Length: 403
Image (cartoon, rainbow, N blue to C red; front, side):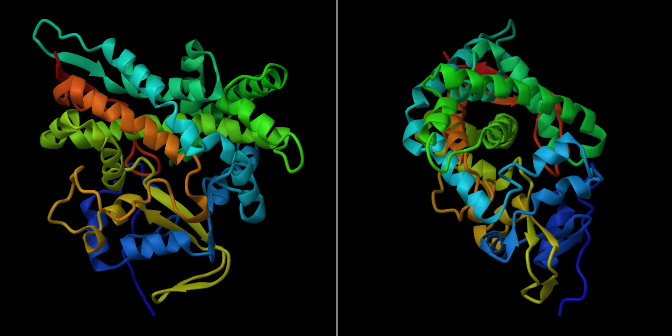
């Protein structure tokens, strides 16, 4: 029986899940102890646990773990797709599925390209010193993610700043300062929920070619989504889809700009956009850990997890585990046979909207690389803690505009 393990202080805002401390713990063993239960540090054990039916998502306990035991946010959180389990979870995934079919999202690729180019046009001209400059979060990542969300939901494009503001504040649900941020989170939940309720009511009377109408019309008879289920799902989509895509785009630029050769290759070969997304999410994911809860006593390679025990699969650690990935070429967008990363979760809780995120990012990254040559960070920027959900708050970049 395993008697001891490293301790990683995940609830410390200064803790970095990509740090040498984590990699040292990974060298010493496949798991560590944390304030949020055990952390899985190696690829083989992490991917196996995400598929293990003795464990469920475990996110339902996140409010309680942060000292939030009642209130509107906690009540809503319990009803999101992340928290619901078993037959109810599978039913919701099945009913929401028609809005996320690959063919439907792939048909939107030209619209994504047009939007990305329009945003780049607004900052692509060089300044007097020959450099172009952009604050990447506010001038590209946030409007791109938010306007795609508006496109999917059929919302007026000009309303994206308000939707983004709500989504940004509600996105603090995934952070490690939830209790401190609760007033902002609950105000955003109230605002976004009311807005979505109005959209649903409108689409029932005035159907359109959008995701909301698709979900309403696909299940009008029989085992349909209830009004509450539809509202909860759309509010969750609005904040999770915007925040994670915005953050992941920023992390993609951080990763690629640190490797100028890879940035140059991507600009020359747009066909590598999809590979770039996978490689970035493997080494620098916005979702830095994936939670699971034991629904029965479970023994894992000598570690006993009691019923109710919480386990965190550390996404960066398992995605960079040299036992699975090799360490000769740590990052290369031309490699197409890497093991699957956990940036979209795994098992029955694999992200329902993953194809939307994969498509919009695979469109944006090659266009940015082609039009922003020799790009580099223009100062340190401002970043969320590298724990929980991470990403840039401000990320200034300078570049040589393409001809």
